[in-house]
Amino acid sequence: MEDDDDAPLAPSIETPLDLAFERARNDPEETANFYDALFAATVFLPIDGAYDDDGNQSDADASSIEPIFYEVEDLPTLLIFDTEERLAIWTDEPIDYVGLTGRQLFAMFEGDQQVALNIGVAPSSIVIPAEMVTWLHERAVEEPETDDIAAGAALEVTAPPKLEPEIIARIAARIAGLRREIDEAVFFSLAIDAGQDEAERRVVLGIAASQAGLADANAVAEALAETARGAFEGDRPVEVALLSATSPLMEKARKVGLNLPVVQVGSIH
Image (cartoon, rainbow, N blue to C red; front, side, top):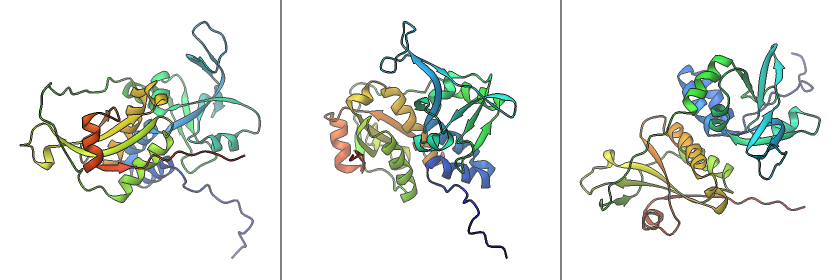
């Protein structure tokens, strides 16, 4: 047997997208869950510049971006990476980029180009063809379903159904990626009236958004909803509720629900 000590190592599975991609690679029925994970993930897109409403280049007040298109397999391609470190590995030159959720990305582009994820730098390296980008765009711009609760309804908050450690880990990992936008996260079950049994109750991920998160609260909710639905694999409907930290519902939820860690990470120079 030849000595392979000097052979380059294959990229290791490090992120939720890597894990979702590996599952889909081994089981085609997991493909939809991979795209759910991609919608929920924060991705980093190389750009030529960001511009404000008046067309002036501005990072602070950007309302539009000009992406960089690359040639991959002789076709115009957007490159995206699910970590800033992977983007840095891919390029050896200074580059501007923007971070946004996968759902936001596919809502912006209708399928005139293909999209390459983590190309050459991760196990989740894939080129998504233009026709699939079109389908993802249509899905991304669908209006989310909302369900209003009648005023005066008697709400009963109880502990959530038993959650597998893997489910908790997947949700916690997504929350860690949104730690600047979220102050608190808790899973609980919600009954509209006390007569509902456990199987009929809503499973709710209650989120108290930070001041930064309030600026883009809907995007934060959508990202977490994608991850929550993927984690439960369609076995149970999951809703995300943006709640005030001092609301009666959140106060009840934190007492009986499953409080998820929101880790604040800093750096020492």
